[in-house]
Length: 275
Image (cartoon, helix red, strand yellow):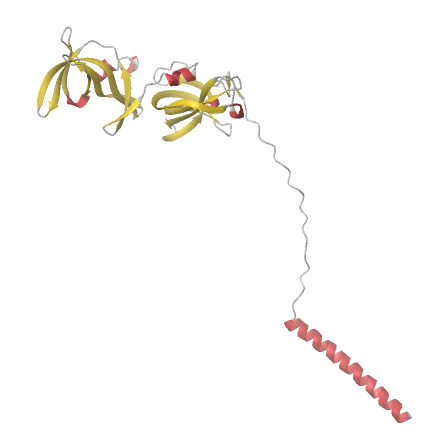
């Protein structure tokens, strides 16, 4: 009996020892080769608040406000419409408010424009495509964001932008240049003209239209006569006479010489201070 009890105690001690050894081995192997279970973290985000559209600044003071040249309508109140013009020249000095409400003054040469209709059905300018002297690049300008406007060459205030743009002269491509067309009412002139090199021939013409260019150079504005469209004496059809082929010119009526043809043919274009 005693022998049996001793054997049982020894067996229990052995089982306990084996159990502890197994637990230790399991812990060691788990530390070496086991993968930790990373607890999952759930992030709860508050719903994003809808952004409130920024209201544009409308009044800039001193009578300057959005829609000044678009019948008081601006932004979404203007509906694009069919119309406008391309291939024009209209030189404007403007105060302009961009989409960030920053105001700048610029001189722009408008080459085309689109139109829009107001809630009252009035047709007004919408988008002006132009060369901007401030940026020295082509830019687009919203007419409803023009706060002040004047004719750049004369300083005359523009009260009706739509009328000024509609009355702007047309342009054509000529000898890789952009020629501005101008209808003229002038007396007949006599030209020494080179129809074929090297011979010059004297011809009397009645000018109808002139083509010219203008650009800013070194802070000055320069004009150049490119051609004269007119009817030669004894002819019925209009001919084009290139300015660089004219050797001399006179007023036919009293044979007064024309020393500066550009100023003579563009007397109503070039400002008096540059004459």
